[in-house]
Length: 492
Image (cartoon, rainbow, N blue to C red; front, side, top):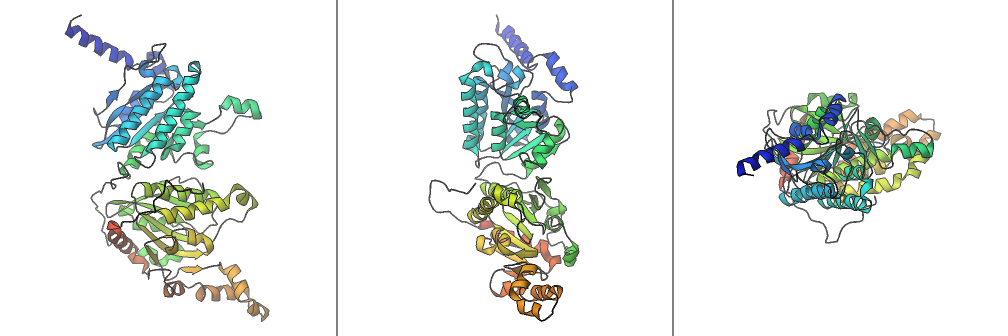
């Protein structure tokens, strides 16, 4: 065969590989409203930028197109990223020995090059026919995912089934995006759970986002999920040694926030976050999970900032854990943290205590104390009790703490505080309402906290954006280090 014939043969083989498990299976996949494994990669990356690695890899004992997973690298907005995309048309996308080898290679390369990883998941689990090798494959992938945690951003997009080891690997990544229609994450198979409990389990995408918190975002279809990944990536740096990308800002840096002067009329602290953000744009993470707390990304003067807010409701353990994980991610990737505080306490519930509220609160306290990135706290309304201490207080390591003149700070909320301090006045006939007002104006006055150095300044609310931006600008050169140790022992 001549060299020209060999080139033709190569092109024919690549065209055959592009069909995955066959044209019929791909057509069936498309009829269900899904893209193929390669179409998902093409939709994610810049046109013509994808370079495939391991296209001719196959299982040891049979020919499997790309062994059921398409791997390689390309660019998103001219930025290097590594990708792997499970192909459901090849052995149901099941994980095997050579499959794992390909995935581990791109994860290792991403770590060495300091580039993000995006995994596209659509698989029914591991290849049972490979026996112990399938278990080994799963272990290798889990180890590879663990090794890059906190080194480069790792985003998983769940388009279809995500079972067993794949589900665990997805949960170990930094963010999980799920297709609302077809996405499912589970460790034990749906059939197994149904046989054991006599009912079909709720492992749909909405449950993973709203109930378990296993996923961070929902997309209406494949294209929406991919678009969410692109937006998310725009807020993240390429690795833990670089800063997030800075964007040109069209918004006025000293833009007044007049709406915040009437802070008493604002119940949702996401309004405050949006007022601070460039162009009032807030990209919320896990928006429908543990809604007592809100976390997400904004830009301030073109640079990414992680935002955390509490909305005055009693905090559950899930909300506490949600905040802790987000702040820890920000600290991994040098993203400054802004907190907007309005908190009275924790949910009073036996089930919360039994679930581990104490442990989750310890995790949050540990997270803020450990984080070395720039941390700014704005006390917008209430800062009562131990809850306020955990959320980026000066004592927990906040670099700058600002407050509004109407804000309140005290060890106890007015109801309990007035009872403890003003018991004699109750006996003298003063009403609880009168005593609570007195408590707020005297004991809980933010100026008391300012006198004792618990906050750095009381600010005019309309100047919030300018003051927060100035604080982060001042903190840009912050350098902090932790004591030398193998690793911490966070109370997870």
